[in-house]
Length: 237
Image (cartoon, rainbow, N blue to C red; front, side, top):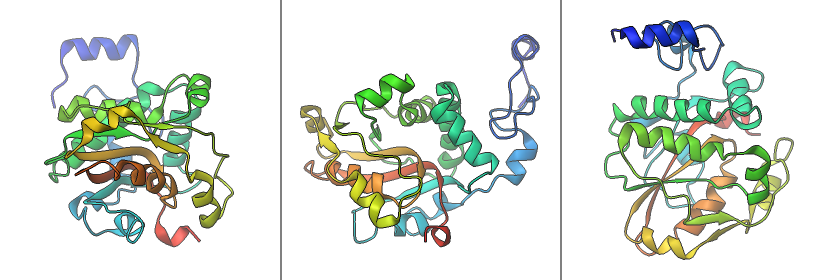
C-alpha cells in the first residue's frame, strides 16, 4: 500500500512502533513490521474454524460454531510481552490496533461471515477502574473498525474478582472463574443472534467457557470465539 504524504508526515512527528519488536514502522507498514509478520507464530486456525486445537478445548463444555486465535502464546516471547503491555501498561490503543490487524487477517478466511454482534469478555468494575479500560473491549473496537460488526458491552458482566490464574492448574482455573459472569437484562437483545465472544489470550479456555455458558442461556444465541493468542494445547499440562 502506498503511503500518503500525510501518513509520512505523521510518522516523522510521532513515529509508530511495531507492536511486537518495538522497531520503528515504515510508512507502508501497519501495526506489525514486515520482519515480525514473517516470524509471527500464526495459528492458521481461521481457515478451519470449526475444528482446530483451540476449538477442541471447548468440545464437551461449550457449544461453539467457530473458534480461532491469531497467534500462539509462549512465555517470554514478543507475543507474551505485547499481551502484557496491552493489559498492564496503559496500552488500549495497542489492543485496538491488534484487534483491527487480526480482523484483516481473519476476514480473508470469511471468519466473520454471519456474525451479528461482538461481545468482549468483561472485567469487574474494580479491575476496569484500576486499569482504566478493558483490553478485550478495545480489541472488539478494532475488529468493529474493520468489519462494521457492532459491539455489545452490556449483555454480560463480571460480578466477582477471580484471583490471577498465572500459576494455577487447569482445574484450579476452571474453579476460579465459575459463577463470576452474569447476564444482564440487555442480554435479551442477543436473542437469535450469532455472537462472537472476544478475549486477548486463551490458555485453558476456562474464562471463555464460563462467560460463554452464560451467553448460551440466551434463546437462539449461537456462539463463536476469537482471541489474539492461544497457548498451544501441548503446553497446557
